[in-house]
Image (tube, rainbow, N blue to C red; front, side):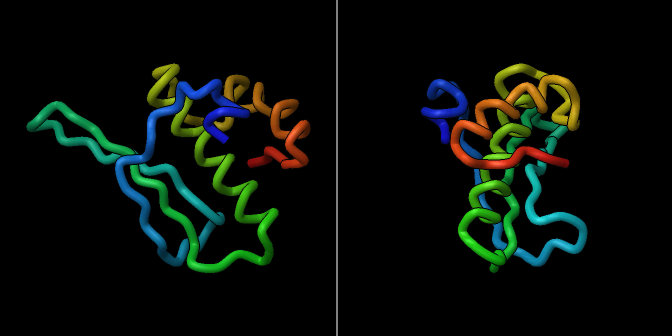
Length: 98
């Protein structure tokens, strides 16, 4: 997805955690260290998905959040910038939603 969605400009997640997520199916979590003045991003994904398409949609969705925050210095919210990827997702037969 880095190549097809982000022109290879997306930074990698600093870590990946597989965990049970109550609301949603994945998360891009920013951890801040005010003492050090640094932050790092963790991709949190569930241990199991209904099918491969749900997994790919979730992964790409969370990658958009990472791009918003690290490349564009945006809030990472589901805003206009986030949904600007809708047509790119469609070309890959993916669905971008909340």
